[in-house]
Image 1 (cartoon, rainbow, N blue to C red):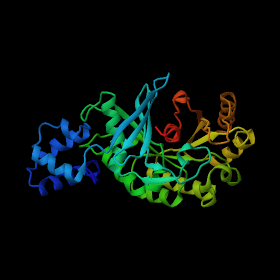
Image 2 (image 1 turned 180 degrees about the vertical axis):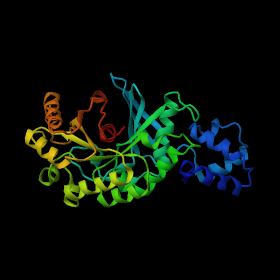
Image 3 (image 1 turned 90 degrees about the vertical axis):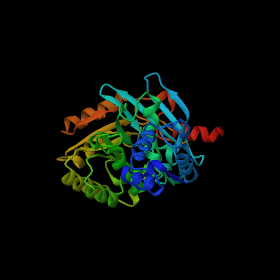
Image 4 (image 1 turned 60 degrees about the vertical axis):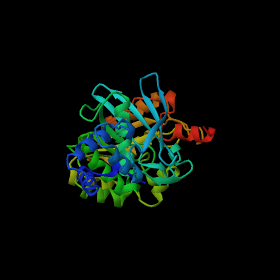
Length: 346
């Protein structure tokens, strides 16, 4: 069955009219959907109309299956989709607002060795409406509504590779930033990719004002190939060139994610090589002491080492910070909670 949240307002209006309803019913239906109401909760639409919709369309494509809250207030959500698959997300509260990390696929086929999302491979892509549903569902869960939303920022950094689900992700970006929708500014949205060079170029042509975040995690191809299979397809030279082309078109600073893995990519030699690689770019490096995944034989760098690495980059003229650890006590890293629940069979 199709998902009603896959529809833009105009597409929803066409559907409403095709079912013989008056045009004004569109705004009523749209408001209900964006408040993430179930069909049974909608009282201002004709029962016959709702029954027609229910025969062919899904109203709420996901529900909260499990929710954990960390000591720092971070909330980890495990959602169950209409087909029974599980995905997850994280809500992080900052002084400037609430940031929601959303998933774009069930599983992932990129195979990065430090990430739990790739355990079990790719099951399927999420539709634009399923990605949007994560935002609307959590917005409601924390007391927000269609006209008074509490989600201020979005990061596409959950399970899956966003650019491997290109069309659905781009449609989601348009839906979530639409002025007549939940209206989250594109400038408050970050998209993280492991580096699909051809898709980065295609994304630049979309002229979206989102922040591009590159999961780099190494200063050279040799080290990158140890943990990221995508490095066998695209070299770092090709990736950096693509990010420069993106910046030239969009004029927004590039963010490089760098997960520090003990004994792999955390030496001062790595810091110096990374500095040379990024010299002259409008960019920022987000250093992340690896959140250890039990199924992977990799150990995160100590925070002391992470700050020393940061200082080395700063000394070399590269803007860098160490990400504040959040949700570590609730399986906060991508794919961890889903993997745990699937393993336990609960």
